[in-house]
Every structure is written in structure tokens, then in C-alpha cells.
Amino acid sequence: MSKKRRIERYTVKTQNPNKAPFEPAPYTYLALDSCILIDFLKLIDPNSKVNKKSPYYIALRNLLSKSVFRKDGTINIDGKYIFCVLPTVMEEISNPNHQLHNVMKNFVQNRTIALELDQFKEKQFEKLVAKLAFAYAERGIFCDSEGNPTYDAFIVAQASIFNMMVISNDHHIVRNQSPKKSSSPHREIIRRINQRVLGGIYSECQALPKSAEQLMHADARKERMAEAYFGDFLSIAVETKIHKLEKALIGKPPFVKESTDKGGKK
Image (cartoon, rainbow, N blue to C red; front, side, top):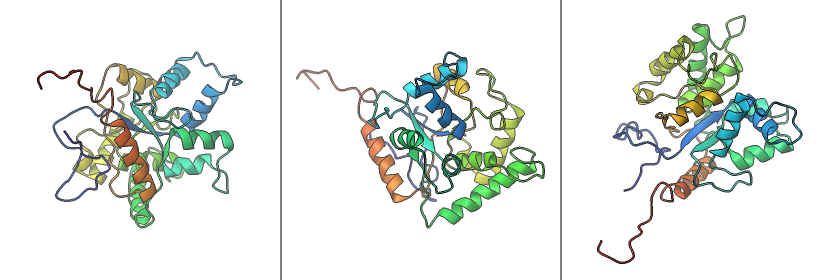
């Protein structure tokens, strides 16, 4: 049975390509906040002084072990999470010359997909992001003392357009970090604004921010994860990378078990 690509473009005919009889996706796209990327580097640094036995770093280690990308960039077909870097997060972790330092550069290149925008769709995307960000700020979330949207507003807005869960350790984005208490008035505001601005296409299973601990708790409980929807906002190079990755993941164990039939009746 063929599977629809989740990068399929939205049209009046297809509407939401994810809207079909529910079948859990074999993998989930996640948007990593800059603090998570930095803490991943601390986790893999043998000389780091952080407490790697804390619940937070244990959750990060568990999450990293479930990545579809190994440290050398090869594909782990037993993985289930595809780490992505949003345009605003890329700005945060880059220097003024738009460059990454070597350790971060290696991690981003080998273990994530940097979501570069199609140049002809960039203005449309930015306009939609701004609409969401200012809507958040009007409700008193992700804003500075003057009521203007912060970087957090743009991060959550970009992830919302792609229907991707933001994984963050920032209390402005995930106010309640408790593994068992991911629901909150803060998240409900985000959900309602996203539904109003983005429309029903994202209403079936909407991605909302979580902490690493909350994600791993949901993972252990086998909770349904939202499926990413990229529309036609991504560059051809990124679309190609995603298509190749999904082709490598779908149709191989453990997603499709090969027949053990040795020549008997079919």
C-alpha cells in the first residue's frame, strides 16, 4: 500500500493530505529550540560539567537515541524522530555572518534538517508567521514589556505553520515542564490562535510545544503525534532531502516486515 508524502502540497482537491483514517506515522518531525540544540551538545561532550543524570538530560539522551539520524549522518531505520531546525532558530545559533561554530555545524548538518524556505514563497511565509506572532502577543504570550512579539513568538509560529511540535526547555515556550502536565491555559491560547489563523487543516491533531520530558512521557504512553505539513514553503533542496529520507525509512523494517515464506503458498 502506497503512502502519501506528508510534504504533499495543499490544494482544494487534496485539502489536508494527512486527513485519512488514522494510522500512526512511523516517524515524527520535531522542531528543536536553540536551548535544546545547545544542551544536546553538552550531553555529547564528555568534558561537560552538567548533571547528565538529571531527569532533563536523561530525557534528552532518550530522545537523541530515537533520532533517525546517527551522529555521522547515516540513517537509523529504528529511529522515530526527525529533528528539524526552523529559520528563526538557525538565526539564533548563527554568528553575525550567518555561520555556525564547528561543533554546532556538525550536529545540525548530520543530525537535523535545516528548513530552508523557497525564495518565491518566503514573503508569503513571513507574512503568515507575523500574523501568528502578533496574535500571540495580543493575548499576552511571547511578548516583551512593550507588547511586541519576541523570538519565541516567531519560533512557535513557524513550527505551527509546519504543524511541528517545538521541543524546548525555555519556560516562556513551555511554562509547565512537568512530564505529566503538558496541558495548560498557555497551550490552549496557542491552540486556539493557530486554529483561527491557520484554519481547519491543522485541527485534527495539532502540534503544540512540549518539553523533552513531556515528549518522552507521551512516547512511553504511545500517544498520537501530530504529522508535519510543509505545504510548498520549502526549497527544492530541502524537499529532495526529505523525500529521500522518507523513501529510506518507509518500506524497511520495522515499518514493513519482510515475508518469511520460503516458497510455500502465497
